[in-house]
Amino acid sequence: YLVFTDLDGTLLDHDTYSFAPAAEAMRLLAAREIPWVFNTSKTRAELAVLREQLGNPHPFIVENGAAVFFPEGCGRNDIALEWVDGMRCKRFAPERGDILALLARWREVYGFRFRGFADMTAQELSEVCGLHQNEASLALDRHFSEPILWQDSDDNWQRFAEGLANSGLQALKGGRFIHIMGAADKGAAMQWLAAVLDPEGEALTVALGDSHNDVAMLQAADIAVVVRSPHHVPPVIKSPSGEVIITEGYGPSGWNEALRAILSP
Ligand code: 2M8
Ligand code: MG
Ligand code: MG
Image 1: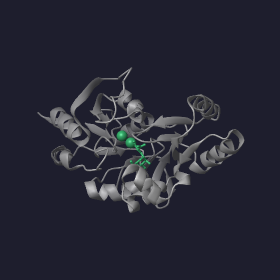
Image 2: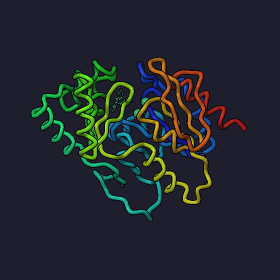
Image 3: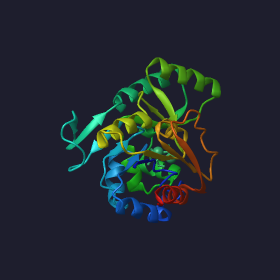
Image 4: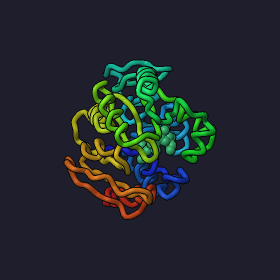
């Protein structure tokens, strides 16, 4: 198996960010030496901390499929990667700076009302999403995407979304925020990394996620685990490549339950 997992609302509880209920399945993955890869909206800076806390040594995918990072000692040396601030990286998405410039122009010209991470301090973000302030400052350190809270009408949303499409950008809905970014997604990044980690294509891919921004990854996996949320109905997986499992439990309990069932002999 090769496991790809979302974090917020999936391996981490939506409200408390706890992963304690997933401990048993995390131990199983380590004991069976199954690579489990974070595939998340979070930033490289947030993942530096979480990889330590969760004991995950594998490559990781940031900002909704925008880039794959290979920490020292991970992955192969025979694929073309660039170095980004001291770590090997494969990029799939344009820079956040370009997105911010466009959003600022539209705000001026059309008067769209939204609040983005670029407008927020760490304290404000911490109040909105419940991360501690030091964690929130790591979430603000973004390179490929701009999460926003939409504060305008549905009609203006239509105009905004058309503008994004005409500019080669998209809006992906996470647990709390709408992520404005280029044409990358978690599914394409997962498939690219699966081919790097398992060139013969022998492993089954397992993907776990809870939200709209996980659908591309869930659709591309051999086993899709839709992790139930106490806050929203599970996303619909319209054209799955394989089996689809919907968990009983929420967040990390559902994660634990599904992986234990998949990995049980
Ligand atoms: C944001 O991502 C989640 C993912 O579902 C969301 O949209 O609600 C990102 O900004 C991420 O970097 C941050 O850690 C998270 C905190 O809840 O929110
Ligand atoms: Mg999520
Ligand atoms: Mg996520």
